[in-house]
Image (cartoon, rainbow, N blue to C red; front, side):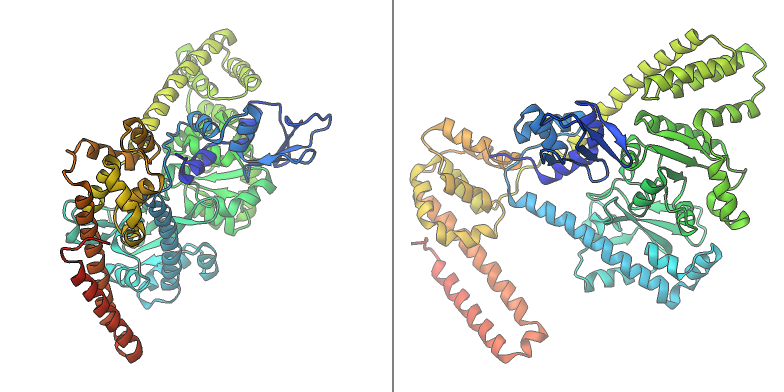
Length: 612
């Protein structure tokens, strides 16, 4: 039966704010870092239904109902599991591709786990180089120059990437990580995309390396800081997008800051990771930062799990003001209150703390203004606003920002505040806000459609790769009942070879379910239950011409399959026998030589013979 992959379930849950979801069905109230409500699954007068937005689950202390967002929508709307996932996926703009459990999916899951393992191991190794290698004194000098010592490097697992790529290639070989895995992790790239044999190059060289964690604490990428100025390369470069890393959905430092954020009841959003680290090291542990990219709706949703207030601490230049406007738009859409720190010109949190001290910086945080108060102060300071045209232009800018506000009462209050401060008519300004809302809605719909299309293209399924002999056997098993019956009798002898062959799992499914070859509807029904990639591989073969002697054809294809399997097995065994460790163990070597001899005899017996 088709099922929804674990990766899709994880994506749907990650994109769903459970408090927001449940709040769309029943009335919920904030209670500290959690939410409470009257349980929808039993009758009660006092709220005992608790929603935890951090861990993304709910629990009723009255009736015991508990689960995640998928479980809630299943139980509340009485939907089957797949329908509940699809409902949430559609809400989040995530395509759902159902599949039957198959080796390709298992390989993908293992590959993701392997990439995380690689990142964690490499982070430890690079940190060790930074702490001990005589080749990176300049990196340690840079750290000291920024006021960071060894303890900070250990806490944040900061490392140094050597200039010599061979150091990393040697390390990867010793740890048994392949070149393909280094590329898939975004650490390396192919020198020539059209020629994989041309070799790899290291994306990060002679850089200070900051590990990037997801909010669960897994290292999934790196951000590398330039140590020697190079105008041809960015000061910071991040890992490329991979199976485990999407910078538009990751906030630097959130894994460490989420508990302090809940305790402080606000998040301090800085522009860069050095600023976030500086604040955290000085005791302001609720500091976080985006990863050298524009603040996104996904960032806002993620932060909204832990707090409903954000203090922006961006540079006081044109780029900083623009970034603050963008962050406000996405945060306020999630009903997150926004205040802004007024930073002195040419200062960032790191430089300000070093020059004036942490207490002076804390005072700046305490003095942070509500977003629109900050905007008024900035605009009144930098614009004369002497003419009605200037006031109208500013009103349109502010109306555009106010249109993002999710709470209607707050939005109405803002309209009156802007109109009063600028001496303009409230009704006219309200119309500007409505126009801006419609514009944002169109833009959002366009963006959602584009992202959905891109996601669908990324998820585009490829036909499952089939070994030639396996493909022949699949075709025979689906089109000829006598061949299918013969293969079912031989399945024990075929099993090991099929387990090690591309597409072998498909043939095993056919032989286990034995669809009626004489009934095309039965065969099509069976195929429709396969994973999409398997369907794409199998369906074309149904149009192949029928075999004159299906059983003989099955015997010949089976012989080829097993012969190929035995040859690979013998080659692997002889390679192991060449290992010096095996050579040094006479008893093991003798046992392996006997096994190789037996395999050779079996191969000889396979010549011109089918399995009997």
